Amino acid sequence: MKRGKKYQDAAKLIDRTVQYDVAEAVSLVKKSATAKFDETVEAHIRLGVDGRHADQQVRGAVVLPHGTGKKVRVLVFAKGDKVAEAEAAGADYVGGDELIPKIQNEGWFEFDVVVATPDMMGVVGRLGRVLGPKGLMPNPKAGTVTMDVTKAVNDIKAGKIEYRLDKTNIIHCPVGKASFTEEQLADNFQALMSAIIKAKPASAKGQYLRSVTLASTMGPGVKLNTAKLA
Image (cartoon, rainbow, N blue to C red; front, side, top):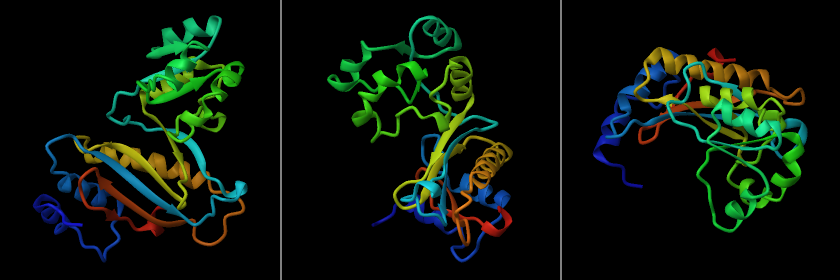
């Protein structure tokens, strides 16, 4: 794959043989984010677990102290009093059965996170085939299936992100924007890492943090010293 001049220049800043500490890594990622838009800074964390086994799944959610820098659109499935509660909390869309054909047949996806009250999961379950592959299915572990819709919406708007293993046992998560200060990015990254380390399954054997890389949308990856993170 041929890389552009900007990428090649940015890559020269980073020594591929070095594993950096958090402060150095964040500084390098900011310096190498040279695109014309405000790039997202992402953490890519390879874990020493096997996600095919239920007891080695790593999944949860964490509120980043400085948010993600992105406006998050929240859809809440609710009924009764919970509809007004969700609207008051600042949900972008609130509804029930009437949204099923809109999402299923019309391909409406003007939202980033879905929250549902437990009594609506029968309705939401009918959307499993379309929401599941997009990672949008509400889940109790992530706090998106709850009766406390006010807290759920507030947390998401404040910068709550979900983390989960992909098929290759890697977690990919945004930790902010390139325009954030180094301190804000480091705080967000540390909050994410603390949550993932706490979520270590009891059945996980050997080295838990196999590799941790920080990168901006268009920039090269910067490897971190995993020994200093554990």
